Image 1 (tube, rainbow, N blue to C red):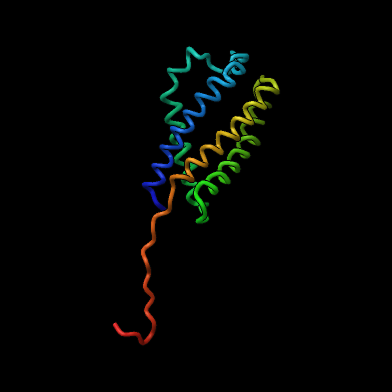
Image 2 (cartoon, rainbow, N blue to C red; image 1 turned 180 degrees about the vertical axis):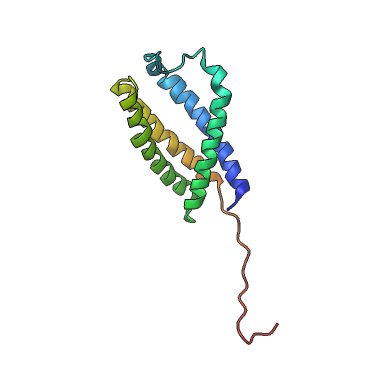
Length: 150
């Protein structure tokens, strides 16, 4: 496993996810979150929690990069990253989006936005990870044939 590339992929994915979150969750569907003030923090109170959020994102992206590296099949990085992102995105839709809808007092529209945004988010993250991660090059192993000279 190429740990340097894994770390680089995790940092890039954290940055990419942060930008995606700012644009999508903060601006495109931000007004939908505002409809649920008893569940989601207000825009004014969120900055105090940004350091914790980014530490959590980096941790999650380290784990995601590791999972990607373990499942890497040797193909085109972007394609494998997209496949990985779709799978993780579907996991998030099935688990997080549906569980949040079942447990939180949010509307169907918010749940649908959350599900779609999560799926696209993880496709983007997968593509970033897949574009950066490369396995460590393996040393060439020389095979000695019986009876061959030294």
